[in-house]
Amino acid sequence: ATDAAPARRTRPAMPPGAVLINANENPLGPCKAACDIIAAIAPKGGRYDIDGETGKLTKTFAEQNGLKENYIAVYAGSSEPLHYSVLAFTSPTRGFVTGDPSYEAGMRAAQVAKAKISKVPLTDTHAHDVKAMVAADPNAGIIYICNPNNPTGTLTTKEDIAWALEHKPAGSILLVDEAYIHLSEAPNVLDMVAADKDLIVLRTFSKVYGMAGIRCGLAVGRPDLLAKLTPYGMNAMPITGSAAANVSLLDTDLVPTRRKIIADTRNDTFAWLTANNYKFIPSHSNCFMIDTGRNGKSVISAMQAKNVYIGRTWPIWPNMVRVSVGTPEEMAKFKVAFKQVMDAPAT
Ligand code: PLP
Image (spheres, protein in one colour):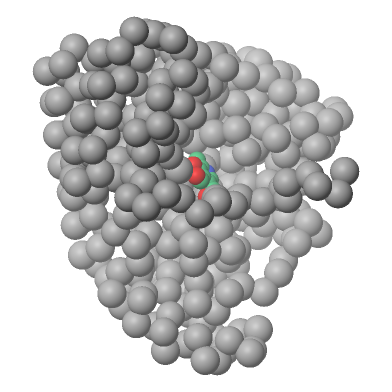
């Protein structure tokens, strides 16, 4: 149908004063050095690449993480390498294994690849149940581990990831999505990449670095694994994205400062939820799940009517809603609206 919505991540213009805590974004935006270089480089945007910006980013990331440069592929966000990895490593005969609930984009790509999808519930502590994931499909092509997990913000240990690598089905890879790693104490597994293990790690500049609308992400893995992604697309980078990502990596205060700002706001919200007897899953990230004790979708609509946009529900937990951590001012508005909604009778 010609009037179908485009299959692209868009958001309509929002009402004035809308509180946007629905997409795990970072209200702090790009850091100052990133904004400065974006402004300086924009006039050179007639070129596909200029001043070797994408190469500079690759070099910086490689040096900071003890990797060779050919272990890093730069994309306009991590969604592309997430999709391409799934298309490359799953098929009608090689399945996709994911935690449940977890980030669903990989599962959607697996549907395109006509792969068998195995959804494995998280453990009691909301970690990935790696033993059950490895056992889920002897013909798995990908075991997807989101660490910290979206939507729960919970962690999977390095021991569990190492165990999964050792015991996974032959010919499969681990796809470790570290979109939120900087916000938490989640273990760094790039040493496993440097040791040539069967994994691809995804990083993004959309979260702690505040560049969701600027676009930059990385796939990090053995060159022979990364080469399997290229037939699906290897487009030019926006030079603004590469340049801003490079200077963001060079700003060594950025991650610790922002991690603290976000953790302080998150912990203040948790203290408030606890004081008001609302149930939630303690998260290490910039999003968390609240158990509303009623249909989560009705809570989302009632919050929207108050101009507060919270995230979605997952089929396995229909009463839980995901909320992203905004600014202290935004969370103050969230608290007022949430209490009003929860005080009203369930619809
Ligand atoms: N992975 C996870 C777990 C996410 O939550 C997101 C976005 O929300 C992405 C990947 C994709 O982000 P981007 O394409 O902006 O890097």
